[in-house]
Image 1 (tube, one colour):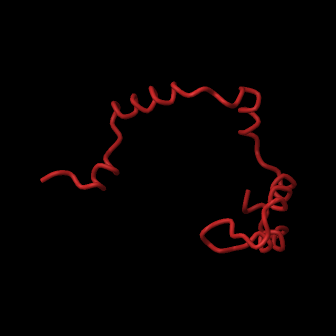
Image 2 (cartoon, rainbow, N blue to C red):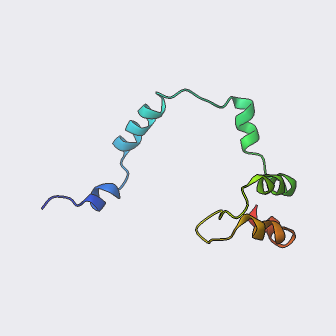
Image 3 (cartoon, rainbow, N blue to C red):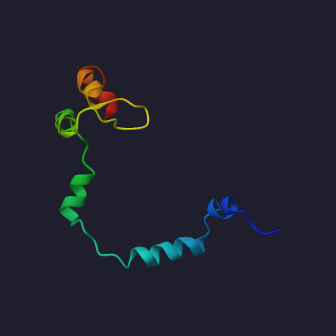
Length: 84
């Protein structure tokens, strides 16, 4: 009997597959220089998070939970640290 779609999709990752992935990744140019790359690893501050949330379109959900941006902004003092 042949493999099902999900057996193929969720197969164990073997070394050959990893090598194939690395070869494909090497075909793409880097779009982030090293200095910017380092800054992407910096911890996000509460001020940065609040600023970003304030730029989101109102009445839109940020995820599957259905919470709109206004809820996050209204509760920011209580949940801001947890979001980070």
